[in-house]
Length: 553
Image (cartoon, rainbow, N blue to C red; front, side, top):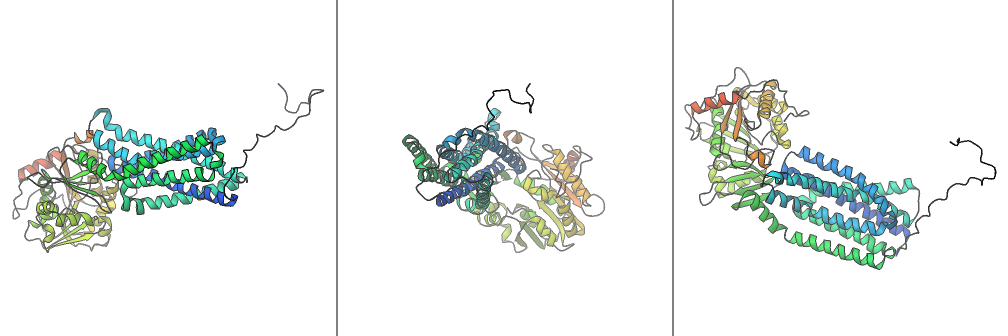
């Protein structure tokens, strides 16, 4: 072994520093270098905005189609960041052909990212219910798109760095600073454009297609316009034809997006969809309700009201809570008006306050013929007062001891956006609004299908100072999952609803019906007592309470 500082052998040539690889020749530009540099940074800005829109679109669409937004966001972000690193390494082999490589990558990215939402929806609508290996098709496709988009986005920056250095050589630190500044500002614009521009005005499908169009135009304009002299004739024509083909695909998909969405919606919800609208809060779909068919209400793809079973659910939710003083009633959620219908069957009710986040749902409950008939035109009753607000925020401003009954007709606790409505803080605020003899009733999800969630709600109510009585009511299996998991296996779980009747003081409230009230059509005193015993047999003890900062569902 030669020592590091050993003298050279006699007669050996003197040591010289190895020669550096020759730098790439400067690009032949049609404009001045300063203008060319600005155009590259503008392209960086646009590409960064498009890349973040693809990322957010995958997260939003996966959360809507598959539920559990935390899990879907974690999968998309982690896979994409990993793939971006791999793409950045892979781009090293394209540096000698940076212009044509960047053009090809932007063309592929526009096609993959622009069509990702439509492809996910198609797989979910037409194959998601097949079962077997097809049940995981949407999730597998989500990972595949995250990986592909991440690889392509990761390859952008090294190639853009090479192009900007070919315009005018500068120190690496300065070039990286300029490039990342444009990249981060573009990401900011893309992140804001997605919720405030693309979603409200174009929707998820057309918004993704429009983003792909902007992407391929920006990449093609930079390469075919600014660096066209660095391309061979064959490369120019190949990139031009590929870009025009992608534009044609994206344009055709955008033109057919409406027909595609209607066909996919019918594949998911059945052929009798009457109303489909997207509000500022959620997507609302009404199916049936005419010609003797039962009315089904879907909110963000989850069955919220099943026409065959809705009376069983709403009578079980409302009637046990009305056995006692009930002059003033607060309904949290229940924008469909069906819980209000049950409350108004008690003629001695003086005031009903409904707090619903989605004004579009309450408007539909007022004006849709089938839904307003189902809720007994509850919103036409002068005793009913509707407030459009978040339930938690409304409780924070509600006066103390203002209500005899509080009815929490809210989405399933397993849905990420609803966990705050099943927290100890939320129930503490609800307890403050109740009179000393008041009652709170909570829909706590299925007892048989997810007993741990149900008894976590019970532990949370106890932590907030309530005493409670659990009960469950069985219903028919609709074949469409009502909870946070929309996989076909979820719909095969035993179909029931779990409720918790709670009192702010004293012993646990008895499970009974109001003897002076209306006679329920689907619920008897004997059945209610049996339902209480059935729920109690599933008890799971020792579960921690769920809080705003530490959700347990």
